[in-house]
Length: 112
Length: 113
Image 1 (cartoon, one colour):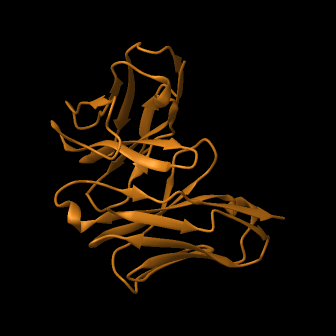
Image 2 (image 1 turned 135 degrees about the vertical axis):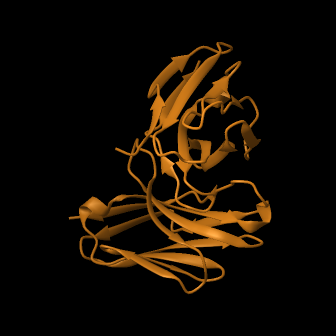
C-alpha cells in the first residue's frame, strides 16, 4: 500500500530535549516536505526537499532541522524544543513538483 | 506573497442541500491549485488538482472549478459522511524551482442527517 508513515504519532517532551520525528514514503517520490498545523493558522510549510541532499526552508523553519540522506526518508529534528513548537506535524510527499501531495497521519507534539 | 483565503470558515448543511465552498487566491503565476479533505486527527487527503482557468474536475458529489482568481468546490446533495474540513492550496510559478504550497485555513463542513 502506497503511504507516508510518520513516527511517533504522539509525543510529549520537555523543553530543550532534542527529538526526531521520522517520515518515510514507499512511493519513490522526489519531493517531500514538513508542515505544522495550528488552530487559526492552518497548515504552514516548515522545510521541503526536492531530492536526496537537497533541502530548503519553507515559511516557518526557525527551530527545526531536516536531512534527506535517502530518497524515502525525511526526518524532522528539533534540537532544542520550546513550548511554541507544540503543534500537529505532517509529512508529505509528491512524485513531481506540481502533483498532489500524499500526507502522513500526523504527529501530535507537546512541549512542556 | 502568495495568499489563499477560504470562505466560509464553517458551513452547516442539511443532507441533500447543495452548496459551494470558495477559495480565493493571489499568486503571481499559478502552477497548480489543490483541494484536500481533512478528517479530525488525520492527514489531508487529496481530492483534485486544477492547473488552468476554466478547468473542472468531478468526483462523486464533488466538483471543483477554477477561474483566474478563485476556485469553487461544489457539493451536490451532500451526505453526513461528507462532513470534514476542506482545504485549498496553491503552488506558484514565481517560486522558481522551489516546492512551496500555500494553504488556506480551510472550511469546516458539517452535514446533518
